[in-house]
Image (tube, rainbow over all chains, first blue to last red; front, side, top):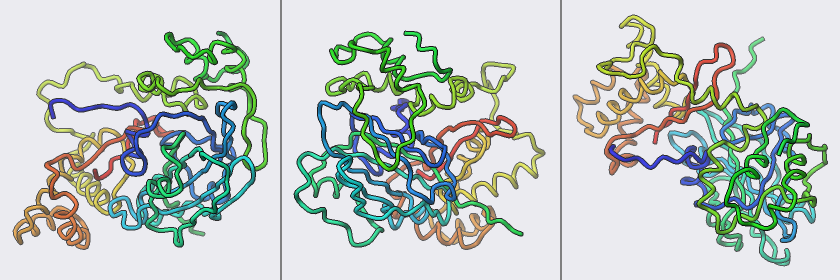
Amino acid sequence: MTTMVRSIDPLVVGRVVGDVLDMFVPMADFRVVYGTKHIFNGCEIKPSLAIERPLVQISSVPSMDSLFTLIMIDPDAPSPSEPKMKEWLHWIVADIPQGMDASKEYMGPKPPTGIHRYVLVLFRQKGPPTKPWQLPPARNNFSTRSFAAQNGLGLPVAAVYFNSQKEAANKK
Amino acid sequence: MACSSSTAWSMATLKAALPSVPSPVFNKSPNSAACNSSSSKPRKMGLSLRSSKPLLPHYSGLSALCPLLSAFPSGLENSGFDSLFRIIDNGGKFFAMRHGRKVPKLNRPPDQRRALLRGLTTQLLKHGRIKTTRARASAVRKYVDKMITLAKEGSLHKRRQALGFIYEKQIVHALFAEVPDRYGERNGGYTRIIRTLPRRGDNAPMAYIELV
């Protein structure tokens, strides 16, 4: 271990860039808010707080007025030590801001075991939303890279991830 | 560049202050951009696209700057600047060096220390990622690597040695079944530590430790 390439970018440190995405240059900024909590890379969110869909605000260069696609996935399903169902699709929204075209209904984080990362990725759509989206049939074994390749989305423009683990059940 | 309306430190102010950003869009109104980002966000239903002034310059072709700019995690501006120092702080040890210190004592007598490390490795192998204090995470690395090395060898003797260390039988059997596929090519370094924000109750520096 003489030389180690140390990266301080939180997405690389948290291995989001390796497991889910390819290295990209962030072009847009977006804020995700669950209830009152703003998401930053690597923060801890309780599943009970994330049951409802979050508030997402995208701020980007307005001269390139284009549509966006947001995808939320869990790369550690069902457990980080054995991610057999990697990745688990939680949410897809296409054609933002034109319409709330929720292609896949929002499903909150439900980590059965271990601490899971939940990644929200933003893509910029290239053309008008003429062609229908090929929705994946099931939520498990989703691949963000192949979905982006299939629909011509290219590299992401923004990404954020948070951690979540199973809450201790209230014993009454 | 003083946008004194809020106490939260704003990324846009820092980006405005940094030199050698040759984008013409950026020089127009850094002040208003900084004020925009630090004021509280109005509540909007559903998704909204901000059509006001750009908060970020167009980044194409400036990827060399990104590692510098992202040195400060962009989301932590909400929790204040001082939390960054907590991450970098070393805990106030007396000596700056670690000369000759081989065994992490973890503030426990030897029997409890061994039990703690056995418990932590068991849980890490079971869940794949655990959150614990930084000292414990860096102490447990050695034992997790040892267990995975035992599983790589795979003989009965090694299996029994692993059973003597890990608290749960099922985990040992699962480990021995899975390790050759998963870590066959990797030589050592089967864990990764990611430092996080300190714990609220006692300000202990925390870390996630995960398998590879």
